[in-house]
Image 1 (cartoon, rainbow over the protein chains, first blue to last red):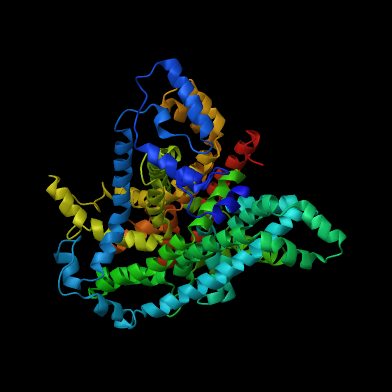
Image 2: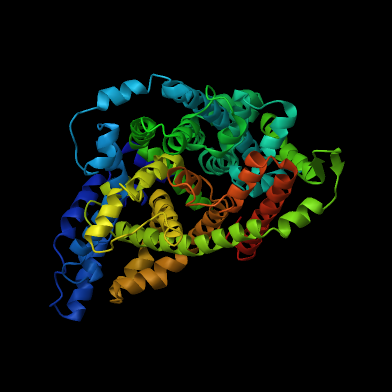
Length: 353
Length: 279
């Protein structure tokens, strides 16, 4: 886990520094500079070339300089262009939704999709998010619902994952292994496979339209438990726990005072993953809520899309567009701010397998 | 530990058991609910609607997953080797769709692909493909595949990238000193070493693909009839339970779909354990 810590201390490290132990941002920058030199040294004799490669590799203890790969001239440009094209593909829908959030309903359909048109209708569209147009529900209320479900569900999932992950990591009791395998099995069955059974159970238990029917299942996160177990295994030294036990600390005290502070980066990752999972969940709320005051954003926007097309409520189209934009902004901002955590979390996932 | 176990039992085990229980009964308009044994199962298994959805998601998975993983692996290698400029910026951009809910992603793409006004249709016309309809029966599946590739490539790329970062440096160095061409380093050294990560992604993506739901449902909102009520198994279950109100039948379908997924998961775990890739 030194890798993660090192990265936390130096967020400016280049991409190559991200996962290799030890490298500094200066080395990253040097390597980047070299990327532009191209295939130098191709005319030097093979033996001298090998010697030079050896030299280069020794002086450089992080990333391998690009020119040593013996690439053809222009390869870097070609690959950068390909990455650029895929970046455009990725950003096209985002650009479209930003531009069209400023348009009136007629202009969304009648003007060129990738440029602005007058009148500038952004603020009018935005104000509609605070109104209950045609009685299909108020966007701002759905936003509040989503935030509520995501925060309580996400914090709950993180807390439960921390307890359970620490438990699986530090205590071996009867059947703990069986339970962990059960958790792993659940890891491979995403929530959508369980949603219909959950809905049937709620219908029987009169939990339809209960917000707890949405929040409580979100707190059960096999992915979170798995990540926390792996993270505890590698970041909380067993000797430290044993020493604390010898000193006579109670188990609860040891967990909160000794282990938990060491688990913080892992906890942030699980929190991020859980919040996103609830924020983006569609199938469960679609089934269990049938009054629009309880809807999260996903179900509300789905309803608007359907009504706009099929019930002739075309004035809902600009609301779908701006509503979609407002839905994705908080998460994109969250991801950009917490980059090092999701990178760390995914790293954990790949170490563990 | 205990709260998790209680939650695990309440929200995973109980619903499954109740679904199995429900699936064994049949509710009739006259006569109420009666025990009907396996009849819901035979009805589902004999239903061409159910199976056409199953076949469709298998075809979908067989195309979408290899294409997406190929793109993801390609860019993961490019960024890992540092052979493109601005790698860090590109990685961040590629990952953005992961933060976009599938509903919003599908809504955005529906607007872009919409047959009458969508900018993509104008683009296709400009390139000489006049009369292109991305929501037509022949193009709807490719459209869904493009949307899902848009949503998930970045996430898969970041996982492969972190896996590639763990390939020991000295192995690659030795290959370079032997004048091994770059593509051979990738295919012969890096690819085998990140195999476990690729296997994991194949299984996770397969499980996700078998439950395809949100994208076709949203597309069907934009173009009625573009997607049938039984387009995917999950859509079939949804429409059987909600629209047709046949909960017993839907429960049987959920159990069958769940079993298929569990079989795939278990097979993958056993396969990986035997290969020593899984601890």
